Image 1 (spheres, rainbow, N blue to C red):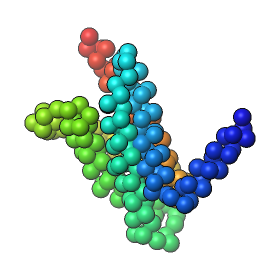
Image 2 (cartoon, one colour):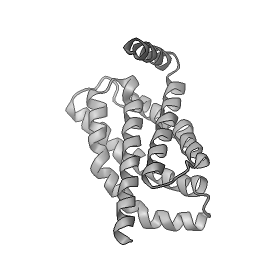
Image 3 (cartoon, rainbow, N blue to C red):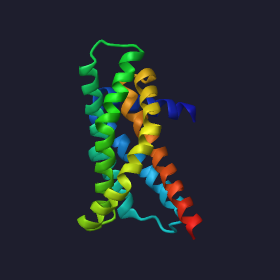
Image 4 (cartoon, helix red, strand yellow):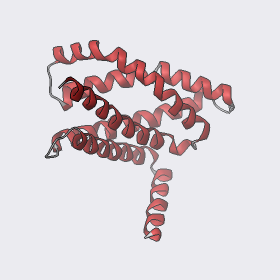
Length: 185
């Protein structure tokens, strides 16, 4: 069994080296799909909502993976040759002040309009109501992830690490939302 896993890992790393954007996009889509499958089960959905699952996977594949790929390339250009704790702090701050607010806003709009199929007016109201608390919560969690990512992850694994943590984060948020709903019931 370990030979199969080692061979699969070796092939994955080769694809990551030969086709980094494509590999990161597919990985982000796959992880988003895993996360949504778990989230659906946790929320008590009996039959998997395939359309929802595919739309969440599309988000990971078409947006999250490529965005992360180019974000980390840009960070390497901006901070070329600079290392150390001060540089990591600057990278985390830059990411948290730019891409974090944008990504949370974009995901909330995408999820409302595309995944849930709601009208723009409803989505806009939900974003107005929930976005500030979502972003504040993100700023409590994601800087730690960013620190680990920039300090310890090799460049080629940063998007994959981020996508994995994002998958776990989505499951956590679903559990939190569900526990609030249970308390209100």
